[in-house]
Amino acid sequence: MVKDECKTLLDALNKVSACYRHLVICAGGTSDSQNLREELKKTRQKAQALAIANKNKLTTILKDKTISKDDRAEFERLWVVFSTCMEILEIDMRRALELGQEFPLNVPTKHLIQTGMGGGTSAVAARAMCVQNMKYEEGNNIDTLDLNDLEQEINEVGEMIYEMEMKVNVPQWTVEAKQDLSSELKSTASAGTSSVRMISVNGGGNKKLCDTNKIFAGAMFSAVLIIAIVLAVCVVKFA
Image 1: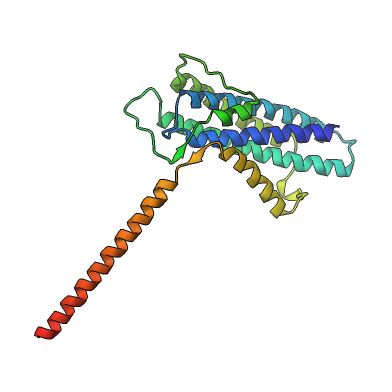
Image 2: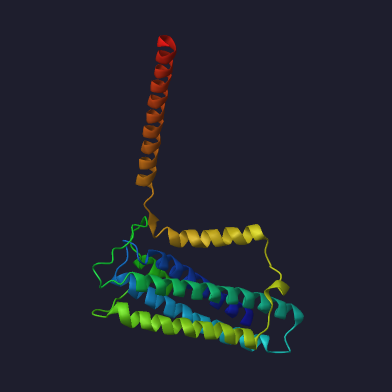
Protein backbone atom coordinates (compact mmCIF):
# COMPACT_ATOMS: atom_id res chain seq x y z
CA MET A 1 0.00 0.00 0.00
CA VAL A 2 1.32 3.44 -0.97
CA LYS A 3 0.50 5.02 2.38
CA ASP A 4 2.42 2.33 4.28
CA GLU A 5 5.40 2.71 1.94
CA CYS A 6 5.49 6.46 2.60
CA LYS A 7 5.30 5.93 6.36
CA THR A 8 8.10 3.35 6.22
CA LEU A 9 10.35 5.69 4.21
CA LEU A 10 9.63 8.61 6.51
CA ASP A 11 10.25 6.51 9.62
CA ALA A 12 13.63 5.41 8.20
CA LEU A 13 14.56 9.03 7.45
CA ASN A 14 13.62 10.12 10.98
CA LYS A 15 15.76 7.39 12.55
CA VAL A 16 18.80 8.07 10.37
CA SER A 17 18.50 11.84 10.96
CA ALA A 18 18.29 11.24 14.72
CA CYS A 19 21.43 9.07 14.60
CA TYR A 20 23.19 11.80 12.60
CA ARG A 21 22.30 14.39 15.24
CA HIS A 22 23.78 12.19 18.01
CA LEU A 23 26.99 11.83 15.98
CA VAL A 24 27.24 15.59 15.36
CA ILE A 25 27.15 16.15 19.14
CA CYS A 26 30.49 14.29 19.41
CA ALA A 27 32.26 16.36 16.73
CA GLY A 28 34.90 18.63 18.26
CA GLY A 29 34.86 16.69 21.54
CA THR A 30 37.35 14.24 23.01
CA SER A 31 35.58 11.32 21.27
CA ASP A 32 36.13 12.96 17.86
CA SER A 33 38.24 10.97 15.42
CA GLN A 34 38.76 10.02 11.79
CA ASN A 35 36.24 7.21 12.27
CA LEU A 36 33.60 9.62 13.60
CA ARG A 37 34.01 11.87 10.57
CA GLU A 38 33.58 8.84 8.30
CA GLU A 39 30.47 7.85 10.26
CA LEU A 40 29.07 11.37 9.88
CA LYS A 41 29.70 11.26 6.14
CA LYS A 42 28.05 7.87 5.57
CA THR A 43 25.08 8.66 7.82
CA ARG A 44 24.27 12.01 6.21
CA GLN A 45 24.54 10.48 2.74
CA LYS A 46 22.09 7.75 3.78
CA ALA A 47 19.76 10.46 5.10
CA GLN A 48 19.95 12.37 1.81
CA ALA A 49 19.17 9.25 -0.21
CA LEU A 50 16.11 8.60 1.96
CA ALA A 51 15.11 12.27 1.65
CA ILE A 52 15.13 12.06 -2.15
CA ALA A 53 13.02 8.90 -2.06
CA ASN A 54 10.53 10.56 0.33
CA LYS A 55 10.32 13.69 -1.78
CA ASN A 56 9.69 11.84 -5.04
CA LYS A 57 7.05 9.60 -3.47
CA LEU A 58 5.10 12.29 -1.64
CA THR A 59 5.35 14.86 -4.45
CA THR A 60 3.86 12.45 -6.96
CA ILE A 61 0.97 11.56 -4.64
CA LEU A 62 0.12 15.11 -3.56
CA LYS A 63 0.07 16.34 -7.18
CA ASP A 64 -2.51 13.67 -7.98
CA LYS A 65 -5.96 15.30 -8.08
CA THR A 66 -7.83 12.00 -7.90
CA ILE A 67 -6.96 10.96 -4.32
CA SER A 68 -9.69 11.20 -1.70
CA LYS A 69 -9.96 14.03 0.82
CA ASP A 70 -9.04 11.79 3.76
CA ASP A 71 -6.02 10.36 1.96
CA ARG A 72 -4.87 13.84 0.96
CA ALA A 73 -5.11 15.00 4.57
CA GLU A 74 -2.96 12.04 5.69
CA PHE A 75 -0.33 12.58 2.97
CA GLU A 76 -0.22 16.31 3.77
CA ARG A 77 0.48 15.42 7.40
CA LEU A 78 3.33 13.16 6.26
CA TRP A 79 4.59 15.97 4.05
CA VAL A 80 4.75 18.38 6.98
CA VAL A 81 6.66 15.82 9.06
CA PHE A 82 9.02 15.26 6.13
CA SER A 83 9.59 19.01 5.63
CA THR A 84 10.37 19.48 9.32
CA CYS A 85 12.78 16.56 9.26
CA MET A 86 14.60 18.09 6.28
CA GLU A 87 14.95 21.43 8.02
CA ILE A 88 16.43 19.75 11.10
CA LEU A 89 18.81 17.72 8.91
CA GLU A 90 20.03 20.90 7.20
CA ILE A 91 20.63 22.57 10.60
CA ASP A 92 22.65 19.56 11.81
CA MET A 93 24.69 19.47 8.61
CA ARG A 94 25.56 23.16 9.03
CA ARG A 95 26.55 22.48 12.65
CA ALA A 96 28.77 19.59 11.52
CA LEU A 97 30.41 21.88 8.95
CA GLU A 98 31.13 24.58 11.52
CA LEU A 99 32.58 22.08 14.02
CA GLY A 100 34.64 20.40 11.30
CA GLN A 101 36.12 23.74 10.26
CA GLU A 102 36.74 24.81 13.86
CA PHE A 103 38.30 21.50 14.95
CA PRO A 104 40.32 20.02 12.07
CA LEU A 105 41.76 16.61 12.95
CA ASN A 106 45.10 17.16 11.22
CA VAL A 107 46.01 20.35 13.11
CA PRO A 108 47.63 19.37 16.46
CA THR A 109 47.36 22.90 17.90
CA LYS A 110 43.56 22.66 17.91
CA HIS A 111 42.58 21.03 21.19
CA LEU A 112 39.34 19.10 21.41
CA ILE A 113 36.73 20.06 24.01
CA GLN A 114 35.93 17.92 27.05
CA THR A 115 32.16 17.85 26.53
CA GLY A 116 31.43 15.00 28.93
CA MET A 117 30.36 12.69 26.09
CA GLY A 118 32.07 9.32 26.16
CA GLY A 119 31.90 5.91 24.53
CA GLY A 120 32.06 4.76 20.94
CA THR A 121 29.93 6.10 18.11
CA SER A 122 30.24 3.16 15.73
CA ALA A 123 27.12 1.48 17.12
CA VAL A 124 25.04 4.59 16.41
CA ALA A 125 26.38 4.88 12.87
CA ALA A 126 25.96 1.15 12.20
CA ARG A 127 22.36 1.38 13.36
CA ALA A 128 21.71 4.26 10.98
CA MET A 129 23.30 2.38 8.07
CA CYS A 130 21.57 -0.91 8.99
CA VAL A 131 24.91 -2.79 9.02
CA GLN A 132 26.66 -4.86 11.66
CA ASN A 133 30.06 -3.18 11.41
CA MET A 134 31.17 0.07 9.87
CA LYS A 135 34.04 -0.02 7.35
CA TYR A 136 36.34 2.98 7.25
CA GLU A 137 38.37 4.36 4.39
CA GLU A 138 42.08 4.79 4.97
CA GLY A 139 44.23 7.75 4.02
CA ASN A 140 41.51 10.27 3.21
CA ASN A 141 42.10 13.91 4.09
CA ILE A 142 38.81 14.27 5.91
CA ASP A 143 39.54 17.88 6.91
CA THR A 144 39.41 19.25 3.37
CA LEU A 145 37.76 16.77 1.01
CA ASP A 146 34.81 15.86 3.21
CA LEU A 147 34.17 19.44 4.36
CA ASN A 148 34.04 20.56 0.73
CA ASP A 149 31.58 17.75 -0.03
CA LEU A 150 29.55 18.62 3.06
CA GLU A 151 29.30 22.27 2.02
CA GLN A 152 28.05 21.25 -1.41
CA GLU A 153 25.55 18.79 0.09
CA ILE A 154 24.19 21.51 2.39
CA ASN A 155 23.47 23.63 -0.68
CA GLU A 156 21.78 20.67 -2.35
CA VAL A 157 19.57 20.07 0.70
CA GLY A 158 18.66 23.77 0.79
CA GLU A 159 17.74 23.63 -2.90
CA MET A 160 15.66 20.51 -2.27
CA ILE A 161 13.71 22.25 0.51
CA TYR A 162 13.08 25.25 -1.76
CA GLU A 163 11.98 22.96 -4.60
CA MET A 164 9.62 21.15 -2.23
CA GLU A 165 7.99 24.43 -1.22
CA MET A 166 7.54 25.42 -4.87
CA LYS A 167 6.08 22.08 -6.01
CA VAL A 168 3.78 21.33 -3.08
CA ASN A 169 2.17 24.11 -1.07
CA VAL A 170 1.07 22.63 2.27
CA PRO A 171 1.03 25.28 5.04
CA GLN A 172 1.95 23.62 8.33
CA TRP A 173 -0.77 25.41 10.31
CA THR A 174 -3.48 23.80 8.12
CA VAL A 175 -2.46 20.25 9.03
CA GLU A 176 -3.92 18.63 12.14
CA ALA A 177 -1.99 16.11 14.23
CA LYS A 178 -3.30 12.54 14.35
CA GLN A 179 -2.11 11.89 17.92
CA ASP A 180 -2.30 13.71 21.23
CA LEU A 181 0.74 15.83 22.06
CA SER A 182 1.56 13.66 25.09
CA SER A 183 1.71 10.44 23.04
CA GLU A 184 3.86 12.08 20.35
CA LEU A 185 6.29 13.36 22.99
CA LYS A 186 6.51 9.89 24.57
CA SER A 187 7.20 8.34 21.17
CA THR A 188 9.90 10.89 20.39
CA ALA A 189 11.49 10.48 23.81
CA SER A 190 11.65 6.68 23.57
CA ALA A 191 13.18 6.84 20.08
CA GLY A 192 15.80 9.34 21.19
CA THR A 193 16.66 7.44 24.36
CA SER A 194 17.40 4.21 22.49
CA SER A 195 20.09 5.97 20.42
CA VAL A 196 21.48 8.08 23.25
CA ARG A 197 22.16 4.98 25.35
CA MET A 198 24.97 4.11 22.93
CA ILE A 199 26.81 7.34 23.81
CA SER A 200 27.13 7.76 27.55
CA VAL A 201 27.45 11.04 29.42
CA ASN A 202 30.16 10.99 32.05
CA GLY A 203 28.31 12.95 34.70
CA GLY A 204 28.83 10.79 37.80
CA GLY A 205 32.28 12.12 38.64
CA ASN A 206 31.18 15.72 38.12
CA LYS A 207 28.22 15.21 40.46
CA LYS A 208 30.48 13.86 43.23
CA LEU A 209 32.88 16.76 42.71
CA CYS A 210 29.98 19.22 42.87
CA ASP A 211 28.74 17.68 46.15
CA THR A 212 32.25 17.92 47.65
CA ASN A 213 32.51 21.56 46.66
CA LYS A 214 29.16 22.30 48.30
CA ILE A 215 30.28 20.69 51.58
CA PHE A 216 33.56 22.60 51.52
CA ALA A 217 31.80 25.90 50.80
CA GLY A 218 29.33 25.27 53.64
CA ALA A 219 32.16 24.55 56.09
CA MET A 220 34.02 27.69 55.09
CA PHE A 221 30.90 29.80 55.49
CA SER A 222 30.25 28.34 58.96
CA ALA A 223 33.85 29.03 60.05
CA VAL A 224 33.68 32.64 58.87
CA LEU A 225 30.37 33.12 60.66
CA ILE A 226 31.76 31.75 63.95
CA ILE A 227 34.84 34.00 63.72
CA ALA A 228 32.64 37.03 63.06
CA ILE A 229 30.49 36.24 66.13
CA VAL A 230 33.58 35.80 68.34
CA LEU A 231 35.03 39.11 67.15
CA ALA A 232 31.72 40.88 67.79
CA VAL A 233 31.59 39.50 71.35
CA CYS A 234 35.17 40.60 72.00
CA VAL A 235 34.48 44.13 70.72
CA VAL A 236 31.41 44.46 72.97
CA LYS A 237 33.25 43.01 75.98
CA PHE A 238 36.32 45.25 75.76
CA ALA A 239 34.53 48.40 74.63
